[in-house]
Amino acid sequence: MNAKTITISSSIKLIGDIQQEIARQMSKHHQVVTHYMTEHGYIPLWVLVNVLTFGKIENFSVLGIVRAKDGSYTYGTNDAYAIAIMFALLLSKSDLKDFISSMRTAFGKLQKQLHTISATDIMSIMGYDANWTNLANLI
Image 1 (cartoon, rainbow, N blue to C red):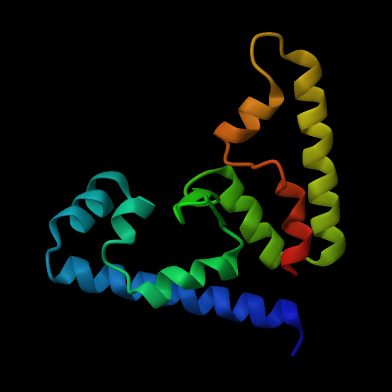
Image 2: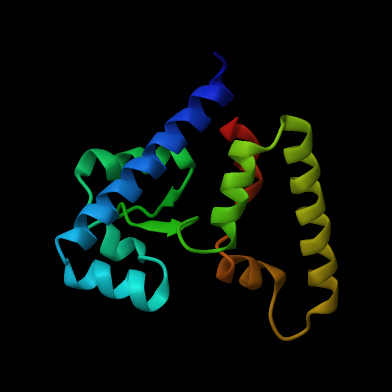
């Protein structure tokens, strides 16, 4: 079993555990969890951390989610970068390199076309931090 298989397996288990906990909280009629799932179709991370165990929260590092110095999650939670993290876990190494290259090219083109805001600001809004190309190191 290689490192990528272990990472994907760990990620799938973590996602399954989270889904199970969400279902459990909804069956207990946890007000906030039920509200977000029924009204919005998702649960924000700040709600999720209130119902998950510390061990499950700590496992988010498996997914490559970036933390701030205070330990809060800043990127890769409910944004475009979260999708990129999943790509890193599911794509082959060569496909991931192609994806990163394509995104780098797209961000470069965007930078040339913008005049009132920088591409870096747009990337930040999308959840991409300065070291987003480190996605390749997840596998």
